[in-house]
Image (cartoon, rainbow, N blue to C red; front, side):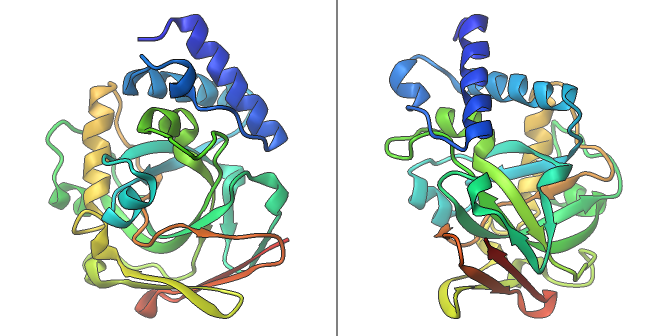
Amino acid sequence: MLHPDDIAAIAAELAEADRTHGVIPRITARYPDATVEDSYAIQGVWRDQNIAAGRRLVGRKIGLTSKAMQQATGITEPDYGVMFDDTVYSSGAEIPVENFSNVRIEVELAFVLKTPLEGPDCTLDDALAAIDYAVPALEVLNSHIELEGRTIVDTISDNAAYGAMVLGDVRKRPDEIDLRWVPGVLSRNGEIEETGVAAGVLGHPATGVAWLANKFHQHGARLEAGEIILAGSFTRPMWVSRGDSVVCDYGPMGVIECRFV
């Protein structure tokens, strides 16, 4: 376990990297004894400082929920981070690429909760009952820690590499569509780069919502009504650069478009 002074120092490093859009050396290379609980403590310090500065928390992202993402990162268990109101874009948005580091895109579904959700024994059925609607989403990854050799401790400390999300326009209640078979066809500048279906996320994309409620219970917290839960990618991350146009076709759940400027 890290000393509280080390946790505060790492959180300050990451906050500065966020401000400058820079990258810092791996935490685990410098603090090899750091644990997953340490990493959530680092994230928590960063989160609380942002809230104190006036940012509004609107939800949580879940990461590393599919085999595609676990293989892409070499990390084998899910993680989570926080999402603030100023990181949410609508389809058609122009997104400043200089606001992020190691910029990549992932294909996901997001869920908005109509009732609170609490562990420790939350199931997929419990999660589906708490969800108001699903909406297609693209996640913009924003990694402030060098990518080579990262562990889950590095990733969680860095707010699970969350940068922003782009939400689509089509909303579906869980009883209106079989969410497992929502497709994603991701294109960059007119060329298809990644494809997948939402079942790639733990067998059902809402399974991650139940996982998160149970994880939160370990930290003495619960998911609240109105929160947006970004459920995890069912494709590998796709690199983007300034000038790239991104389109993702979700079949019955519509299309998301955005451009990086």
